[in-house]
Each structure stands twice: as structure tokens, then as C-alpha cells.
Image 1: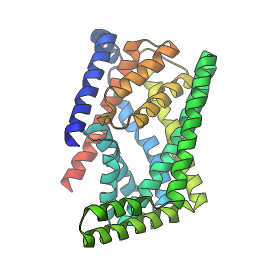
Image 2 (image 1 turned 90 degrees about the vertical axis):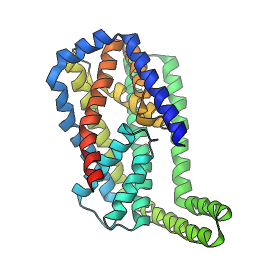
Image 3 (image 1 turned 180 degrees about the vertical axis):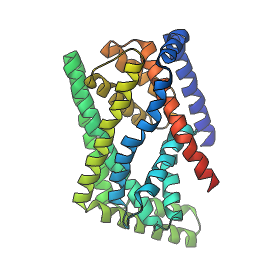
Length: 313
């Protein structure tokens, strides 16, 4: 697995460098230089949408943890997924461990993150749907509209299936049954019990419809506020766009990074998504590459301190 992740990381890096070279290193560098210190404001700005996302997670964790604790854990989770050569589930595993270390029952910790991930996918669906609607309004392309409808229909069916499986199935107990067949009998029985308890903890959260709706609203609000980063960055880079175009760029980037989640740090994936969306919107390639680099700068400056604090603990 580590070998595969390293190969994917290297491949993504090569794709990113290739796309940057196609847009022109010099032109991109000039845009970044012209924007200057203002791009550093993206670092504290990111705390706002992340905080809204954390409030949604806070609703799902019972007993409640302090918001500050969950914010720190969420920052580490994001840093894991954005900065380290791991698949995008590495941060979630780290989050479970950190919650458990702070006294939360392991099943409750794991269940809250599993359900929070499901809610985040639902919020992403609403966000991407709104972005797709904005894109259709901006381009008036019937072929594009038809493709978007098919894609969104498949996505909502997949989300509904995932919800039903978690709500009524025994996913983790089934996984542990497989582990029992592979491992020794005593070890397998222990894992089976853990899997059943985790399934029960997930169901206890999923029956709380009001909490799920509140969490969904907070996380969707965080995604919408995150568009401000794209909107401001492009203005500072000398290529201002309207809010609908910023929404299209942000939602398309989020969609492709979640769909191709197995590429560590989304290297190459983010750049390709921005270039494709930029071409449809008529934004120059050097501008969207500069936007991608500004976002990655923010990811490093925002996430690296959290990783360093996590390593010190």
C-alpha cells in the first residue's frame, strides 16, 4: 500500500508540474508576485469555513467535546489529507485516534467520523449541484446540462445507498467476520464484537434526524463560505470573477478531489480540475494555476503548525 501511494504521489506531482509548464511558469510567477502579501490573508481566512464544518461535527459527537479540541483535530485531519502522501482517509483515522486519546469511547469516536464523512458527502453533493446549476446558467450548454444531470443522479443514488447500508446494514460486523476467518478464532471474535458495537454506534447517530439536518446545514454553510477564498484570490491575482464563477471553480475542484480521492494531496487532480473549469468559464490557464498554487500555499501554512503540534503531543 505504501508503495502504491508513493507511485500515485509521484504521478500526481508529475501531472501538476506538467500542467504548470503548459500554462507558463513565468506568467504564473508574475501573477503571484503581483498579488504579493495579500495571498497570505487566505491562511487566517480558512479558519472560518473550517470552524463551520467543525460545528457540524460537534453536533454528532456525544458526549460533547470542546469546540476548540474538535477544531484542532479537524485541522490535523485536513493537514494529513492535504500535506502527507496518504490517501484521503488517513486524516479520518488520525481523527479517531485523537478523539480516543482525549477520552471519547473508541466506537463513538469512529461512528462520529463515519457519519460526519457521510454528512460531508451530502453537503458536497448539494454544493456541487449548486455549482453545476451556476455553470449551466453561465454557459447555457444543453450537452453539458445533460451530462451534469446524469452525474448528479448517479451521485444521489450512491449517497442514498450508502446511507441505507450504514443505517440498516452491518458493515463493520461483516468486515470483522472476514477478519475472523483470516485471523485466529479468539482474535476474530474480539474484532467481531468491536464491529457490531461500531455498527450500533453509527445507527444511534443516524436515527437523530434533527442533529443530522443541523450538521448538514453547518457543513454546507462552510463549503459556501469557502468560495470566498477562490473569489478573493482571483481578484488579488488580477483575474476577478463573479460569485457564480467562483462557486463553479470551488465546487468542481471539491468534486474531482473527492472522486479521485486516492491520489495523495490531490496533486495534479486539483490543477486539472481548475484548468478544465477555467476553460469552460474562459479564465486563462496561468490564472487558475496561480490560484491552485495560492491554495496549496495556504494548505501548507495553515496545516503545518497543526501537524507539528500533533507530533509534539
